[in-house]
Length: 327
Image 1 (tube, one colour):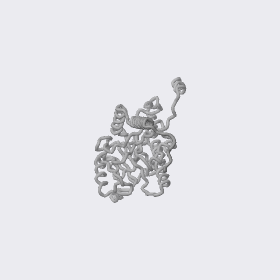
Image 2 (spheres, helix red, strand yellow):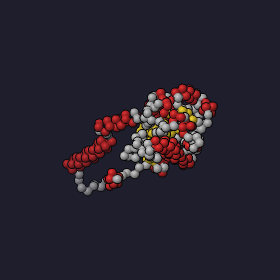
Image 3 (cartoon, rainbow, N blue to C red):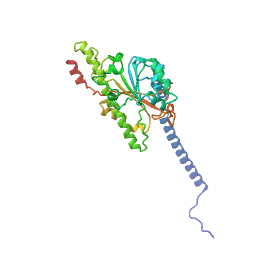
Image 4 (cartoon, one colour):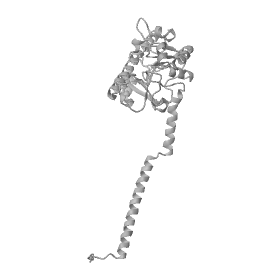
């Protein structure tokens, strides 16, 4: 026979316990619901925030990182479809564009891009765009064979003799080596980007510096085109620097290239950046460096950004500005 338990639970006590348990359960559910709502509210953006984000995206998609009246040197053009696109979209005048390729000749490019290059090349030649081959992004002055005996105007043409070089642009730099070790691959591309920045500075100083000296000589040493910020009205610094543009894909391994740090190490700073809107360049077809094949994922589905760098400038405090104004 089972032994009776001590104590006695009445129906009233049981009812109270159940009621208390129900209340506690409701309280827990309420707390959970409140926490969930708070998390949802935190994650949801206000209509104003969403509208601002949409406006920002619209602004970025309409940005062309160079002016139609400016000059532009394109580096590493591949099958020359980007150069063709910006001419057809009238983003720049043909006479203000120089397109270059790392490859040595038309024959070599036809072998690499047999279905796309020749048509693009013929179009650019017909439009009067200057085209150079065997141009190394990291050795621009040397590979373009610019020297005292063969100055800029002689290499590019007499119409460029007194024309400033405003922008140098390198889209999607790649060595084409296919290094599988990620650390080595990152380092290899950092060397490429660093060399590009340094080489672009040298070319700017040589080309624009010479033009500035000629203009100053004609104005008896007075630089009439300078403004109070140290830049000329055409955007060229006293050293001759224009803008250095670089377009890269978002994400890894590109983020690990640390292009802003490489720019800083070259005495440059970020002026601005903008989303690379593929829809702005409908004729542009991004290809691999070493063949006509497209990349694994279609380029237009990949997010990319164009960074515009300029000569580094230290921020001046109010005291320095006042002293400068008093001179």
